Length: 627
Figure 1: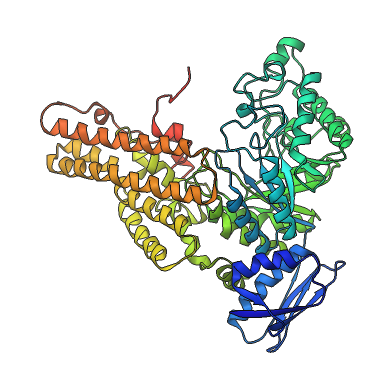
Figure 2 (figure 1 turned 120 degrees about the horizontal axis):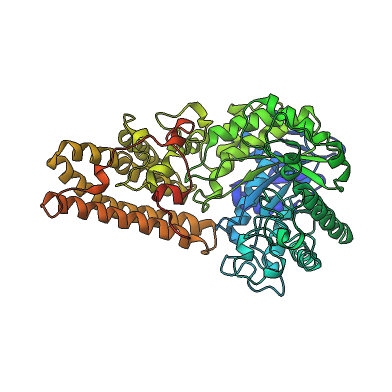
């Protein structure tokens, strides 16, 4: 085992080094390889080196030390001598992990992610929590949702601090609160189904309790108060009580009252910027190039940091335009990019890297000092958060370098995570299929579409025709199977995607082939398909178990029930397909009515490759629940 001897200023690094000892497999010994530590908190210049006998690490902050240590360990394995320099471009390089879309990281899962973040040099982390934190006196807040206790969050804060990472609470105090309001226990402060009632004293008493409880477990005196996409504000009970009022006026009143609370509590607040920026757009579009936020609105904005979020554009000019417009709003501007782990069952690395490559150089040019990468979990958190690692490594590297050196990135990534970058990047192929442009910039979510779309209804079958997707996924499944067998790292993650590709090697074109055989009255083909449908009921169950294993490796059990229900539905529908085909073949049915319908091209497929959508839109064209 590698033995190391650190010389120099090591105070405050000891616990993090202990975590890294277990992670990388080295020991501390006075007889070990000497690494001289050079700590200069006034400099942005960083370095890691080895001259053949002695090592060097130059760092500024604790998180930069851990990044340089991980780089030192990687290059020490590969080179007899080396000297690598970097310069950090930002004061804060952060992540934001969504723990409100059913997947709530358990402590071991969160700590693993924090260690990985430290390797890459992140110094800030947020857990996006709409209702997944404990609020004293409100038992239904986060009820049956896996909410964190104060003790759990305090433990994570301690652990993160050991690694030089500041944990910041990230909550909502206006919209996105359906999970909180669904029980009717806060009807007196409810405007619409997911928006709080602005202007009521009881509302701000409630919000102060949220802020107090959300911040209590953390050292940080900062808080993200959310307030994005508060659509419908002022249109429910507010309108009944107060009549019609301009949305901006309502919004600004609320922000001023909330910032008053944060200031009273000695907190520095940040918020998503879209509800302000939309006020300058005639269409209410956040990404309206012609939007001009009126000067009278700018003057009314209280002192709050504005977070501009954009993980869509791949042209630097777009980021420059919108960031300059935000600078004109005269508040500190923070940039939030994204690693695409949402609205699909697989990550989209192409989109993640292209948007990051376009955005971060502009942030440097405009002297934006804080950036973070979001990892949303929209529509059930089907993609495990750990799948974001390639996108996070690229994001971090571009924060420490002018351009990303992919050869160096590959060396460091493999040593950091025990998996080659290009092998991990294979997961991108689950959605970057035939029929999808390079890097999947239009965010086709083919693997999700093909998994959940109903085999008899086949909403996306016209899009699928002609792409030989069964063969494509068969080849991918074999590649992933070999990786799962050969590599020890991330076995559960790759087992999930191996099983997914295997299922899609049968299911992707199932509906297309069934419709073609039915139209031709090809009874032999229909009989074969009935057999495949029976196989798929077992294959889908194996996939469910693999997905469940990947889920529980990192997350609390709460929220998994949603995916259990989805898989159960997929299995049941395959059983229905099998029984209906058999009934048709043995003469019990004269027609299969669903297959009598001519298939139409789904409108969304004209811009999204094979298509994308929420589960509710893929599983049926009928409404799954509600009036």
